[in-house]
Length: 325
Image (cartoon, rainbow, N blue to C red; front, side, top):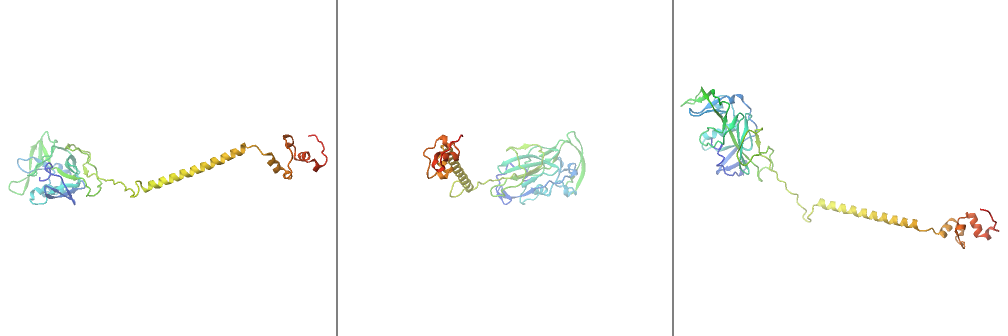
């Protein structure tokens, strides 16, 4: 199974333009960006690879026996690489790993701050443990409890010493399924700034279960850079403009308030000053301006203008005639 489950031996990965260096060898990633369509036949078609092995569902070798293809081509190539020595190692995932429609995300394990191992099992299968087998593709990661009571199942097996296959029937108590494992790589400062994806909220230890969604992808790693300050001042240009406008407005308001206070004070002083009788008489009677009366009393001040002139200037009006007020 090569690199499918040996995550404990995988060192830290360094990004190199879509690839990574694992154990000093270049490894290509095969992303699974869409969910492989569900095929109902795959859950009931079982394969036995030897007389001592159990029955396995979702076998990637189905395409060689029929037109049914249970796994996506990338997953099939990932399982077949063990039979091709010297080929460039292939790992599923990279920037996206979406489980097939018949599968669900069964477990995940954080390898290091930017690498997460994700395991997919069929929806009706239980996650047992991470499959660390590296010799033969004999999966032991996903087990089915549907046949616990036992029952006769039909399966296909390879004939000994031949490339042909035949059909047989046996009673089984447990079946297995081919799993899909892959690595999700978090973006670094040299990679794409952000990738639209669903976040992986898993603890550093291995977790088991069947989340509601089987789609896993990289969470975006965004970096917010602070806006540079002005080279000549510790404040930004907008801050300085705002302070200047505020100070100018306060100054104008202070000047207007001072002028209004001064005008009110002057008006109050004019209202409190007693009237100047001579000024008032000169304004009312211009003919008396050059020859003001010798004495103006409240009695004669309250007289009518005609009587006042007669009382004050009898020579000009002839003999003073007494009159009754």
